[in-house]
Image (cartoon, rainbow, N blue to C red; front, side, top):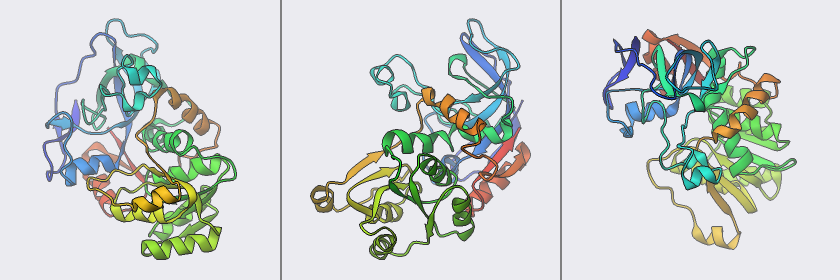
Length: 340
C-alpha cells in the first residue's frame, strides 16, 4: 500500500510503498477515505515532539473509512461498514477506564503516535473501538470528528462544564478552537471568539460566536473583555498551547471563573498563584475524548447542530500531503483532509 512515512523531525513526509497490514485477533483493517492533518502531526514534524513509537511511523489520527477486512474474533462491525477510528484507543481494563476516564488511560494507544496511523491506504485497529459513521455523513468531511470535534466536545461538556447562559471566551480559533466555539454555542453559552485572523473570527461568528476580538497584551485584553462582559468570562478555554495565549485566557476570567487548557504547550506557562487562590479560579486540563462520547458527537453532526463544511477547508491527495502541512504552518484555514 501507499503511505506517507514519517522518518524524523525536520524531514518531509515521503509517500512510499509499504506492506499492507493484516488484521490480527480482534482487529479490523480500515480502508482510509479521509484523514485530517492536525497540529499534533506538525508537532512531530517541526517541533521535535517525540512519537511514542520511534520512526519510521505513519502519522495521522483523524481517520474515517470503510471496514476492509476482519481478523479472527473481530465482531461488532462488518466488511463495508463506514466507520470512524477514535483518536485514543484505551485498554478498557485499567482503573481509569473503569472510572469512565478512558481518554487518560495510561495504556492507551493513539494512531499516528503509538501505532501506524491514517496517512495511508489502510490502517489496522481493534474492531471494538470503531464507531459507526452514518451513511449520510461524508467520510472525507467526517474524519475530523475523530479529534477536531470530539476533543472540543469533551473540553466544553466534561472539563469546562459549560452551562446554558454562561459567558465563554475561546482563545484561538484554529482547527480545534473553531469547534470549541461550535460546542459552547450549542450548549447555550454566549461565546467570545479570540484570534488574530479576521477570516477565522468571521467563521466563528457564523458558527455561533456573539462577539469576536483580536487580542493585545494580556492586561489590555482582560480590560477589553470586561468592557464586553463587565466582570469577565465565566469560562475561558485555551485552544492554542502557548504561554502567551494561556495568559490571555487567564486574564479573561471573572472572579470564581474556570480556565480549561486544551492546547498543547511544550514549555511551562506561569500563572499568578495569589490570584488563583484569592479569586478561587478553577484550572483544568482537557485531553481528547472518551470513546463512549463519540456516538453523541456523530449524532450532533448528523442532525446539523454541529457543522463540518466550514471546518474542512482543504482536501489533498496522499502525494500532496506536504501541501496540507504547509497550509497549517501558514495558519491557513482550519483542517485539510488527506484522501489516500
